[in-house]
Length: 208
Image (tube, rainbow, N blue to C red; front, side, top):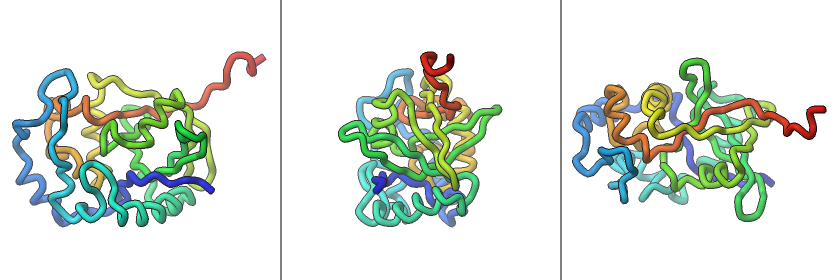
């Protein structure tokens, strides 16, 4: 059986009542947020815990209820029956090689598609992707082998902003308003990994 990792913006296709309040309460950049090119030594509390998502996430990790519910959304996304903004990512576990599945929101920006880790570097799928040198599969009805290319933190800001326009639940983990200027997203970009979805290229030894 496929393992299921539980980072899920499963409400990303559905608007949230709390978006307006969230925007009003977070229009200013928090003073303890990363403000330089280097990643902050520590992050403050997950902003998503201020609302209903506290039942799904705590201390930048999914809760038991979050893990259980996300299994369902991962399965549905893999069938291709959910919003086109959702897909299932499958990557080998770095410890035992088993395939792990995660439902994620995908955003298209300037002709490319990207995945964002709303929980930052602590996400299991991010650790597994890095260990697998980017090799993965994405599923929406059928499986497609891909290579995920990590984007430099210097180039993430416009992608993060674009992602926030479609991930209406996942964006609540970011400590800035979803419609803030790109310059504001630059202050948090080191803390939120971004990966471009590229076609998988077979190694040269198989191309002859």
